[in-house]
Image (cartoon, rainbow, N blue to C red; front, side, top):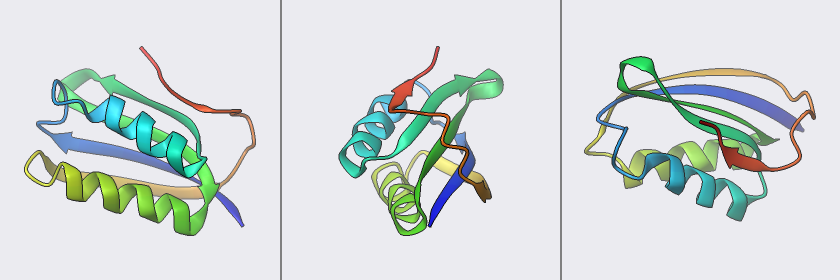
Length: 90
């Protein structure tokens, strides 16, 4: 079943390749949505795909950036189907 996640990652997550890594993993996994830096030094991710795949990207990001992420807020919802691919928003 297609779902959507909205995640705010906090910590030292800007300037460490977080957005580019997120984009790369999301595209490997076939997810759609976007990632962007937000004020205050956090990174925001909105992604759609199968629930297990969405859980996988969160796990991969937490593993790869374990020394940088201090907090994550995840909100789950139904997929909207509005995204065709996954990219970085500026």
